Image 1 (tube, rainbow, N blue to C red):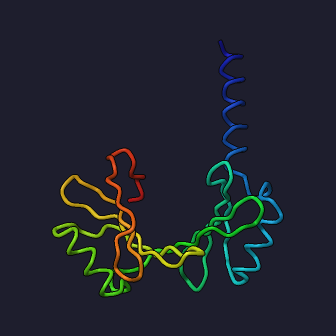
Image 2: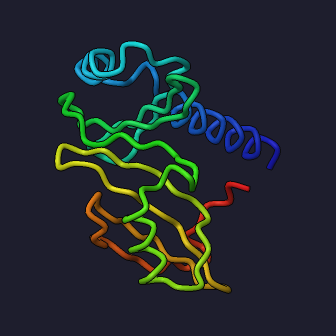
Length: 154
């Protein structure tokens, strides 16, 4: 029994190390594309986002960002949180008229090759909704989140 615990403990430690130390496994094409797009980035931390994407979390100009790349170095998206006062009035008006009574819990800008989106997590009572609005104030995505979908970031 003691041997089994040691083997299991060793296996779990190795698995945790394999999943947490992905920085050295990032394809060189991805690192090169990132360095070219974000030459002033500081404190870059890489993680595998999914089977085909890598995500870099980093600081630039005292703001925390994340950027996603495909394995061939193709840039997909860059995101960073914004304060409520940074939300353009037409975007905020669209959000508040469609979701009256909801409170903004999180707001961020998402930049892709197709343009900018403003993404929000809003809440009313126990209902949490993710909304994406384009720069013209059009709602382009909405998704009601289940309680266990929300990560505990508090």
